[in-house]
Amino acid sequence: MNQLVRTVKRYPFQVWAVVSNLGVFAWLQANTGRFVQEGKAMMATHQSDLERFWNFLKENPLIVLGIAVILVISFHFLENIGRTIFTLLNLLLLLKILGVF
Image (cartoon, rainbow, N blue to C red; front, side, top):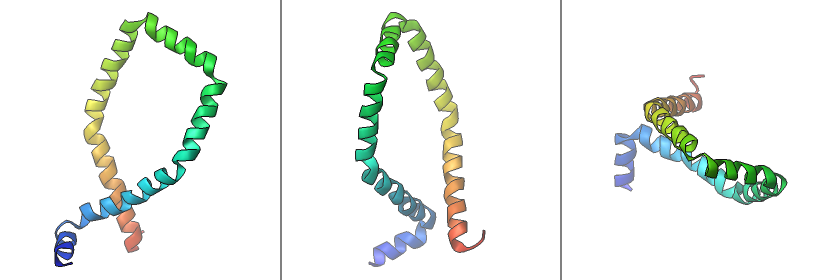
């Protein structure tokens, strides 16, 4: 128990981030079945569109490679921005719970 108290005192923000994100994981776990059913229904509805898209990808590999390179470069630059946004959102949530807002 003392180890837990020391950890919370030493890393309060990191502990708060873990606890706040557990709610997100619990929500995802509770709704996974519904997401799977909706995804299967959507795939059945749009089967011909998916087949046309797959054929386009097979016939144009250079376009796919170009899009992949652009995405990798974009995500490389957005990685630090994403961490900053995540940190700020967790801080805002903490301030809201503490009653600052």
